[in-house]
Amino acid sequence: MTSFKDLGLAEELTCALDAEGYTTPTPIQEQAIPYLLAGHDMLGIAQTGTGKTAAFALPILHRIAGDKRRAAPRTVRNLILTPTRELAVQINDGFATYGRNLRFRRACVFGGVGQGPQVRALNGGVDVLVATPGRLMDLMDQGFVNLSTVETLVLDEADRMLDMGFIQPVRKIASLLPTGRQTLLFSATMPKAVSDLASFLLRDPVRVEVTPVSSTAERIEQKVMFVSRDNKRNLLLDLLRSDGVGRTIVFTRTKHGANRVAEQLVKDGVTADAIHGNKSQNARQRALDAFRSGEVRALVATDIAARGIDIDNVTHVINFELPNEPESYVHRIGRTARAGAEGIALSFCDAEEVAYLRQIEKIIQQPVPVDIEHEYHAEPIARLFASGKGTAPKRGSGGGRTPFVGGNRPKAVTGSGRPGAPGGGSRAGGPGGAGPRSNGGPGGNGGQRRQGAGPGGHGHGKRG
Figure 1 (tube, rainbow, N blue to C red):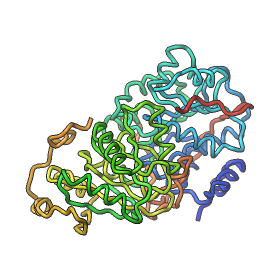
Figure 2 (cartoon, helix red, strand yellow):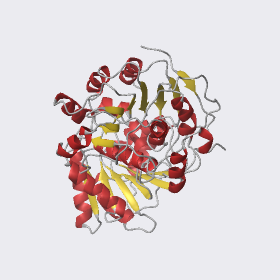
Figure 3 (cartoon, one colour):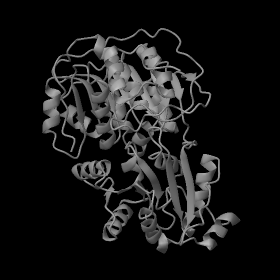
Figure 4 (tube, rainbow, N blue to C red):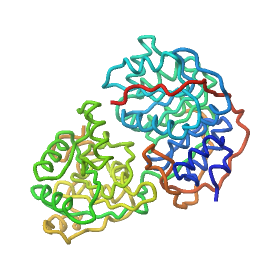
């Protein structure tokens, strides 16, 4: 079995990984790291929880360890673009964890907070910048950051970038970078707009694919509970009060729904908080910290807000409302069973949601077992689902409720399907998850680029 030491990473990195308890790379790490160390561009098809943060962070840090150059004032040597503030913070923390034995400068910039600390972090130049596109564009327009010396560009969760309207800003940012850079693009799905972006950004890339979106983690026990809309609140409360249900993420389709469910849980004596796009960055970070520490038992979230949040020991994911985009179901339930643990995903299905359930079963290519052993089981809804009657709502609609708001051909790296090693859901978004293991080894010499770091501590913006 391959170890991180077998991948040829710098001793400072393997020591940091050992300290975190990581010895065996996950499939995406094992496949990607040799290619990235050789300087290849990469197209990675991977969900959160597969260990992709470490897959791109470790090669970047390896080069920093071997090159002691210092970044010039207001310049950036390695740029990671990510769609959400929470994911930016998580990736920044990952660099801090894996690079704990190195001297390098990093910064994390995102909107929703004052830019002063972020500007100060950038003034001296940084070796690693993790940023959301909107705030980075603002800082560039004000002259606080110069991207002319970027050596590596990482675009993480490109499909979510598309969902959030960031594709054009990303193209503009990329157009200002050196043409000789190394570029990595990661996405859980590959719609045409993301494929076009990959063709625009990447040069003769290697393609690494693990855990397709239609796959669900083997360690997750899935159940659907047919229940009337009016009884969902009571069913949720019963579950959260039952034995064995610990740290839980509850999903709703809308921001208003998340607020309502969280408020109801608090009234019923369950510590809960909501996280969604209308919350301030400080409020979102407080909710995450309280959930991570155990002060909050249930975190109620919308799909976009929860994407990329890696928190250990989430025992249950509860879909209070089924998603109207079936791919979101896979991302939702992937919040549990992380870091090698097992997890349970429970989905409430009312009469208006039976079509959503059919779409979910189609994309995951398996039926979701039905749990009838609960007080609020609605047999008429179960029969409606079993009958196959009813028309599926238009994707993107709310089912009667508030709507949810070219290039070179990549070299393929395919897998044999062995489950990946534990990790991934660490407090630093660490190396872990599950996915197919590659049968193919790295090939070719990619002309490794020189990358480095300067002396000095860590510079990072306010994290809210």
